[in-house]
Image 1 (cartoon, rainbow, N blue to C red):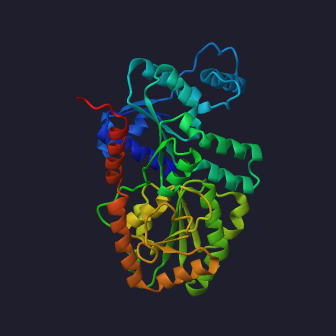
Image 2 (cartoon, rainbow, N blue to C red; image 1 turned 90 degrees about the horizontal axis):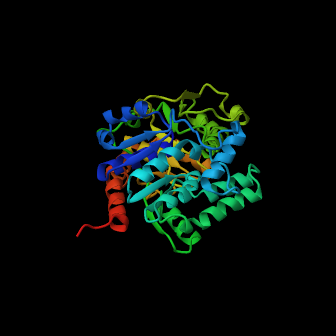
Image 3 (spheres, helix red, strand yellow; image 1 turned 180 degrees about the vertical axis):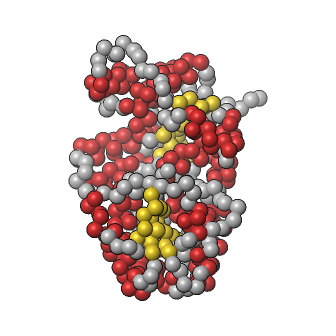
Length: 396
């Protein structure tokens, strides 16, 4: 339902193809395993769900939030660490697995799961721990601090945590080479950092019918509306750029496809019949098929934007800001168009709407790039080679 979930799932799927995979998830197992129909390798994975797991221990005398806070800190053996509700849910499954099986590597998702490191080391001091960094969170924290959403102490906490990752994990997966360089510098070169770029499952055919239309009718923005970078970028586009485009193409409509609800403070920008919100959809392909152009007007964030790679794989040309396209190896004007200022972005959209041949040319080049560099099967093979070479004992 969002980029982070997709990255997590596709890494799991590729690991299941190359290794014996055990996974702890919060989703219920039955609904999760529906994925086997489309991703048969997942049938071989050993899946453990926290759904329905009862949490019972010596702290059960306490209740509600106090109980959870104390239990989380007890599990971590540190009373000054932040409470982690997720850890409470998977603690018993994790410890039972560590008692019963020897693992070569354990991959942790997001900063909160790093609370599990001391628990893992309690049972296995040799297992290699890899942190899958969806973003450089201290960069996102800096943007939140600038918006006055977090305190200076909280910002410093993110920096301290990421500056000391080398003390807790053996390697990091990053989404881009830019993120790799940042983590290497933050950890003074004392940590293995490997780029596992975000990718896409390339559909067998393109969904580019509207790209070939002489008079385009739709643009598309696809992404989770709960994401702050998405919400801010979409607001900027609709408030500052969209009216300039409508002056030239008054019949044009913007399709906003994605789960979530935008904050009320942005509502003024969407009070127009030219913008349609679909909400969550079962399949994005038909929506891309209606759009002549996909826009990614992001102003903050890090990592790699799945919405851009997704559009490339569909064969829909993308116009993005420089920040939105970070982490993707492209040539501006060939596989994607970049514009950072309001009038520049509007003019780039207008010019592409007027140039059918350019849309088709970008569509072909972007699809080719996605197939060669961002197909999950290609990424998975490279990731498996890294793990095998760096961490898996060789049998003589």
